[in-house]
Image (tube, rainbow, N blue to C red):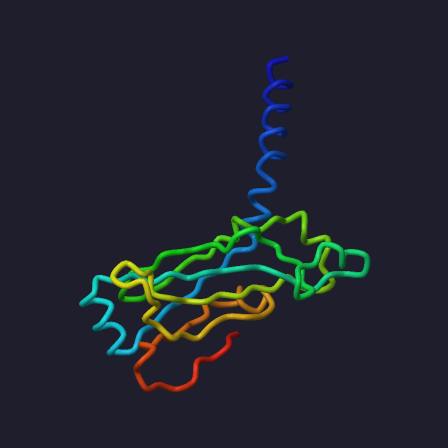
Length: 163
């Protein structure tokens, strides 16, 4: 008889954890690299780096009423912000802020946009010009995407949209 309450409690715990697991399925890794000048400036200023991730998609027929002003479904109420060391490195975007109920409103895949900026600890201005991510989440999750950053005032190649 004691097994029944334990079984029910275990089942309830598993059911309660499913939304958290579903949100975790929206995560991915990225790698931030810096030019020599950017690395030196951030180190001298004791500055950090922040990745901003937002998730979105195109509305399916009948869900257009949920679209934002540019006609897309916003899957997050607020960008996920992940702080990275000022020397660059790997960051994990968890997808924890994704409202998975909104996935039903999408026609096609969930998409993600990631921008990188300095953390604004030493200056109120962003110091970095970085590659960015804008595309299907499935493509971003295949392997960590490398985003390269330069100082804004540094002469450098055009930033790239990845993946």
